[in-house]
Image 1 (cartoon, rainbow, N blue to C red):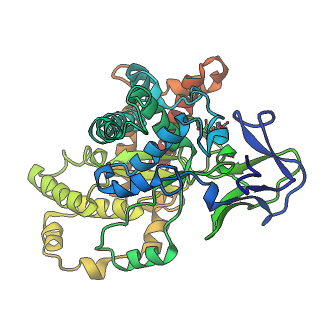
Image 2 (tube, rainbow, N blue to C red; image 1 turned 135 degrees about the horizontal axis):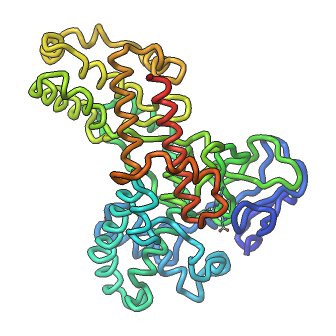
Image 3 (cartoon, protein in one colour; image 1 turned 180 degrees about the vertical axis):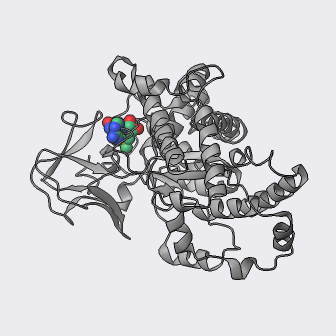
Length: 430
Ligand code: SAM
């Protein structure tokens, strides 16, 4: 099938189920240099709303398919191609006989998710996903497929299959990056709404590669084809790893159903909800003043609800800097700030702020700021445990992981990775 669709595979690599981290993966059969192309896929072999057999209909009825996720056209295409014996992509899609290897938290029971992933942000994200999937299927997909009984059948194309395909798209699809010119324009005009991301598509062969943060290959998009290119030397026998993006463990578990070990995932992060920063301040200041400051901060930070900390420091440094500055202002300073005088001249440059909020800079922050961060981190660590539970029982679990089930292990990697970042932050702000 690969040959018939014009997919060219270097003879230095092969697809294998042995010697890989998870099921299928790609292995080097020979030493590979940086810059070498491992395979090339012509755009005509990609499966998406523009290449599927039902593309004309999807285009014609585009307006009725504007589901909130933007994934509906691909999911309808997959519904059709996955169940059609004549599908051009049949040999590719038959690699997945039932999708039962997918084990995203959306397939765990709610009780299991809430128990194992409390505090990580995943249970809330999954609840939202499941509600959206159900709504999208009922409101958009089902009426559409009922209108076209020659192509789809509600008895075959069920909500259950739809949910499996959503997880498949989450874990196997690719999104073409936005063109650079567009991004520059966007940056120039910050007032403008962000452009919607490109719709997802299925990329045969590229989706056989597993991910690690320290990857050795990367997918490049050219006008005619997509190429998997080696980005650092790979030795014979080693696995070829793609990158799915800079993914924290909670994102990997939520979207792909797996985690990296917490110490090797250099992209791991922990979130501190904004409101945790307030907890320590309320007792020190007049309530009304705090409320006014908070209202203003909510406007400044719009929908963003958390401060994000990576292994090297705060990733939302500008927001954290603003919040600390405003929260620690005296009544007089705040009323001056509200009048909008002084903010512009006062504004420190981005580079200085990012240095101040990286791990090396944090111990040098003002005592009042460190105290607020410390308390917010401490409260966030506590939110992983139920009342009365020991806060750091995960430390014991991490040393005895082998006894845990696969789900327990993956959940522990997420929890402990996040807590380690928060404990480190508490040390730095002591
Ligand atoms: N291994 C997949 C297969 O056999 O179909 C091919 C990669 S597919 C794009 C993504 C899925 O591979 C993920 O949902 C996860 O199940 C698995 N995966 C990828 N990288 C992994 C890793 N580093 N550790 C464990 N599982 C991984």
